[in-house]
Image 1 (cartoon, rainbow, N blue to C red):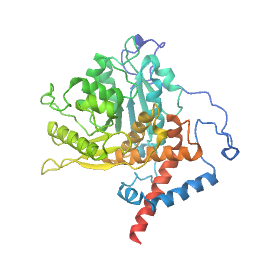
Image 2 (image 1 turned 90 degrees about the horizontal axis):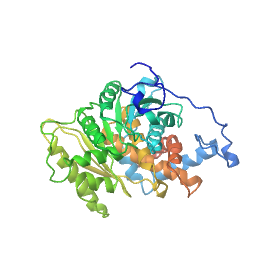
Image 3 (image 1 turned 60 degrees about the vertical axis):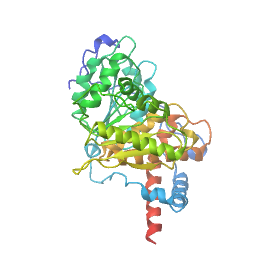
Length: 386
């Protein structure tokens, strides 16, 4: 890829995807948390607060959620002898005019989740806005239409970038158009890495109808070239599956399992995970083996609170899952751990203040959530051994 900055911000100046990095002017230094004032660009708690979070995690690990913590996968290792390449390259595709915050939140969460390198592909016309959110990710412009949404011709550049990526996410802030439907569908089939499919990428695929209940594929003979993670909220699931999920917890388990198994029938021997959002987020996964199709496994997330009931929370979850995939987690591991971390970050935020949460608050507590996760899990497993 050549480092060629476009001559200005117009879409016509991006016939192909090129790479560009915009740095922000540093903001004021963090105020001392112990004084009760935080500059909320980043958040690293003081020793007293870290100690309180650790106490909470220890108690949680031997409390009512102990079985939940024991059941979760181990987080990806962070060896002391390592470099940024050790922790993978994450590529997120999204954004459009008026929805720059979504892809920016995904990028920020991916960084906080530990990806070694994070790259965002966004329409050229909004690249400068997206780049201003975070210094640490790279922004890459793609060709777009007059409404600031990707054109179909962005496909080849995204596929080329994916060849140098460990995992990909598509959808946050993408917008909707006929060209996007075809772009997302092609990427769904052609990307060879694990891919998180969220937000408007789900809507784009849903518009084709081939994943809906009883839907007939217009893509006979084609199959995705890598593992896929679908992360719909109930409305997106309705458009994707052709029926609305119920609010009954037990029925949601059955619905998630049945939809994923129908996906596996349509695309045999293709690893996939469905994360159905909501209170008691359901994670269904299927990993084919040589002897044939396996039954989907189903788990329920037990973390989170109303601090997640705000716009942008789903974009943050996509980033956490993407960051874990980039570090080598499987689709099932990344979805289950990602949902747990996402929920714990919201719980830690509410320990500081119970109301007024925004999605970027959750991003700031993700590093603390990793420590909490490992502490709670360790105490839960030690309790069983004792």
